[in-house]
Image (cartoon, helix red, strand yellow):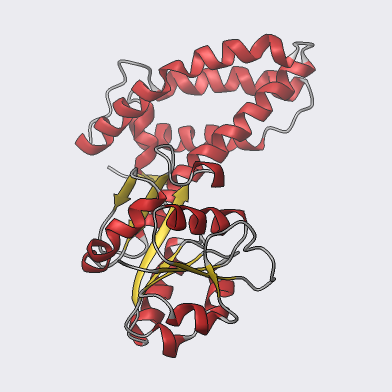
Amino acid sequence: MTSVTVLGLGPMGHALAAAFAAADLPTTVWNRTPGRESGLDAAVAGSPAEAIAASPLVIVCVRDHPAARSILDTDTLKGRTLVNFSGGSPQQARAMAGWAAEHGIDYLDGVIVATPEAIGGPEAALFYSGPSDAYDIHRPALAALGENAHYLGEDPGRAAAFDAALQDMLWTSMSGVAHMFALAGAENIDATDIAGHAKAMLGFFPDMIDLLAGQITAGHFPGDVGTLDATAGVMDNILSAVRANGLDNGVLSSARTEVQRAIDAGHGAEGFARLATLTNGTAAP
């Protein structure tokens, strides 16, 4: 039976260790601040090197990549598999993989799209990228964290790239939600009065995502659902209301600028998916 080491016992690290232990995998833990192992059915190591030596599969879940690098003992890690759930950019993941390869360490970059409470259950989505043989060997143990796991390929930065793209959508959208409430409030509309209508409007998003994805893959951007020329007019009306109420218009103005770039490049009669082809400020052909 594979044993597992978890380095870092913040809320997420604690949840990871608990899930491994609940799956009857011998688990060793270490944390810089003692005492966070409370409630875990796990052996507690006195140092990172001691913890790493206990298992062929080592999980690190700390603040960021520099913090992870600072606690990893390369001599002890050699010949083991390291799964890094510390988060970071695709570029950082690839640099970490290069560092690991130099020291004879198998490296998988991991991303968790879930709260600590969801770990081990069906709602915990996990992304992995890196050497397929390392993933295949440790897949049974990693399944303890949740069956909704996705191996994304050999490029160690791919999991972080998926996460960055999804988080880009999330936080851009959340900014829009907050701005909607600000504009509604400026027009004396209570947040609870508009919230239900906002959720109804978002009901078409899943189908729209599929539509845009298909168009981007095909390289064909019909404007039958709505053209960029028409979108520009709608955005201008919204911006007029935003400015009249003295609200910040930075995010929507940036979106309007992207639309104008595509129009200026001759794509005004095409659909919104055309914006995904913008590169360096110019719409690709």
